[in-house]
Amino acid sequence: MTTHPSQDKIGLWPLTSLVTGNLVGSGVYLLPATLAVYGTISIFGWIAASLGAILLSLVFAQLSSHQTKTGGPYLYAREAFGDTVGYYVCWGYWMLSWISNPTLAIAAVGYISSLCGGLSPATHFWLELLIVVGFTAFNLLGLKITGRTELYITALKVIPLLVLPLIGLFFIDGQNFSQMNLSDKPFSVALNSAAFLTLWAFVGLETGTVPAGQVVNASRTVPQATILGTLIAACVYILGTVVIMGVISPQDLIHSKAPYADAAERIFGGAWGVPVSLAAIITCLGSLNGWLIIVGRIPYGAAQDGLFPKLFTRTTAHGTPYWGVLISSGCSIPFLLLSLQNSLMEQFNFIVDVAVTLILLVYAVSVLAYLKLLARKRTGTVPKIALGLSALAFTGWALWAASFKMVGLSLGILVLGVPMRLWMKKSKVAVNQA
Image (spheres, rainbow, N blue to C red):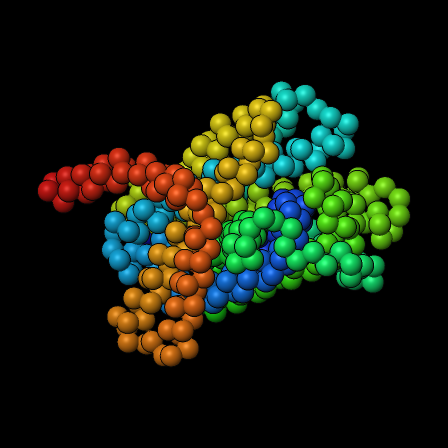
């Protein structure tokens, strides 16, 4: 087993910032307008998604307190259900991570383009490529440096996202909340649909568990960071949505391309496009840095256990699994070509839907693993069992909003992992026979 140098381990606040930073991404600037078509019910969608995310964070906190290796959800699935289930959880989680990462680079360059008065598609692509390559190289320096950087970036992006809404509370017009359900869907269906959209904002609540092998006092630090990071993100999203919906009328919000900038203009007057765009760029780059920290470490634990190729266990002197980082970034680069297409937003939303559906499947397996491990170890008190059942009910309710197409595509991504699974099993048999 590869060990990590102790000097490259991180503590509570860098890890909390990693969780928060991965949760508070580009969606914070886009979701208020996207959700406006549902009316005030979208606030209840946020609350439902936040409560569900907190339940899931408590489940991961319980799991991580007993399992402190690097790997995250893969470890829990493998411990409960064996190699095959563990492998496909790792494969799906790894795939959704590097498929989603390009959207952060694309969103960052989109805001840069708005500041520059527009850029050509080719310039968009080369800037996005430069960002991905630059942050990939930066992540090879080790978790201590990248984790500390993530702490500073998260502070830079979260503080304004809290300060503006707190001031905006004094400028809310209650009339803007009068239309509960603007959609043509029944209340329960509209609530479910709004909650599904907001779940994109909580993809990553489990990321504090992934680098557990490089965390100081992981059995305590990882659970605390997971819960704290999720709570901070929930406060940012709910407070921001309530204030923006209260300051901007539903009709204007539906057509807003920059809800935070429009809200700031109504609160303070003047033009706020530039500072909000700068904040959005910092937000996107911080999330990209955080996810690159995670994506290289997802296959690390599986490779240690012989389920992924051994090259994923090779680390730098600072404990960074460099092949995991390099291969993940290399796989994500072709998706940057989406920025050359006219239907960028449509494709972006498609990736979001697939990613949310796939992560919900990962969450469902993780919760089932939690319940099975409770039964196996006979540690299932009533509160712990109730927590697991509640989290499982939430994931099932959220998946209900996903289309059969999205579920099918998510399962298709898992099927893509079959060849490597068969190859690794064959290689393992050959080694045992030698």
